[in-house]
Length: 134
Ligand code: HEM
Image (cartoon, rainbow, N blue to C red):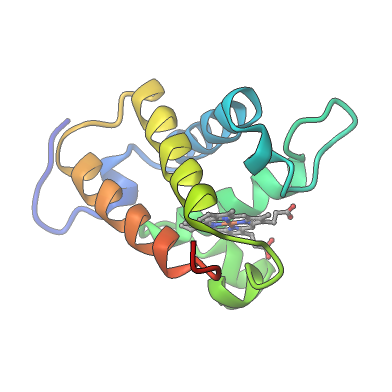
């Protein structure tokens, strides 16, 4: 993967199609390996994390990484802590979330500079969203 000054993480990942594919891999891995985490989400009739939840996270991630601001345009300010206030985020759920994102990045072949950047950012935000002591 070529990198250079001024390239956003969104560009380094290869744009919208690749970010959406990463999000699908993320929730598919959650469905397959982290049932306790998946169950906190809205599920569809097949018991998989819903299309709505997938699309909202994809819109957010695209903007957060430097792409088009769909989430802000269509939903509003991210206010992530507020949006997770009703979700019990303890250490186990934080770690399950981060583990699931690692699986998804492995599966999509996210490597190099952008991988290091994302590992750090996701770990920080997941801990920032923790709202239970343990
Ligand atoms: C740390 C553990 C986390 C847990 C347990 C968690 C759980 C959830 C749940 C249950 C929802 C609601 C989904 C639904 O509509 O059914 C949600 C939405 C969302 N999460 Fe997380 N999340 C976590 C971490 C993160 C992180 C690290 C980010 C950002 C990098 C993030 C971004 C979002 C966004 C943007 C939404 C959509 C908000 C909305 O629909 O208004 N979450 N999350």
